[in-house]
Image 1: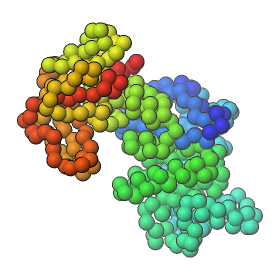
Image 2 (image 1 turned 90 degrees about the vertical axis):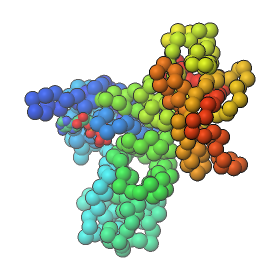
Image 3 (image 1 turned 30 degrees about the vertical axis):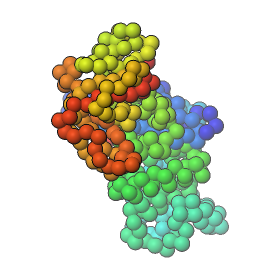
Image 4 (image 1 turned 90 degrees about the horizontal axis):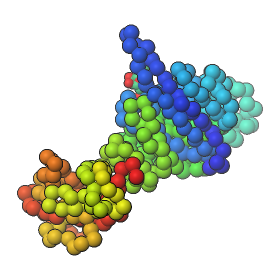
Length: 357
Ligand code: ATP
């Protein structure tokens, strides 16, 4: 990353008029994406991430606000005159053309000299790990290979930014995970700004330098993966990225009384909402010592998941509060507690994160 701005959105709004109603797909988004950054737009279906992406590409014009690419106002510039390229979930390869011809297509159209085409296509196929498969037809490739051809075809034109809309959506989980690592490597190698649209939290956490978490047409948090996970800005972000385990109440002297226990929130007083991640919690039958957050509950579910076991524990505080706990199955896989057991949950003070603090 150079620190220079590749893509800036300034208070961008997109309204659609549909059946006599106005739908606000994007309600005022401001973003500053740095050159060379791997940036993700993450959020549930319908939150406005594709619309935001399409305004960057120029397929949609904003109803309000500004779009800048590399410092230039492109709000009213058509897509073909913006120095960006887009890759879609459906790879849209030319079925009757070989891998080589698919990748070379754009360069031929621009009448690039033959020798340069040869060099650039060869280089690009090397980068996406498809050297040796130049003569194959798209139907003779796996989904992941087809996606890499689509990527090579977009990158060979050397756009300054590449926009990717759920490009791995059609792949099965294993292949998708492998491709996430591949995409990150390719992005690092070519040094081009990537803007990546996904609804998959793990995908965004794996690949991104920064993530904008969107909800209902707005960005709720914009930060790096660790920050988003460890310090979610809103209850929505806490719940969308992993399990939120929200505990709410009135803190007194840095302590929140919950059921038969306490949640330590050093330095906080008054109404707070706390999130604590499932892997930070220890489950046991003994009452934990002072200096830890400790709450009582009843186990309602135990699910063995291989590397860890997931427990649901009902604190019966303020109606019903179910807390999820992940316990690593390190030495043996015998469950610490059974359904119906009365247990203590404990965690260190620094693992209670007060939302919005
Ligand atoms: P998904 O992950 O399902 O693609 P998304 O986050 O990309 O969702 P958008 O496609 O940006 O969401 O849509 C945001 C909202 O705008 C949705 O409520 C959608 O129904 C609405 N919308 C999108 N395009 C149009 C359109 N052309 N006309 C009317 N409403 C639209």
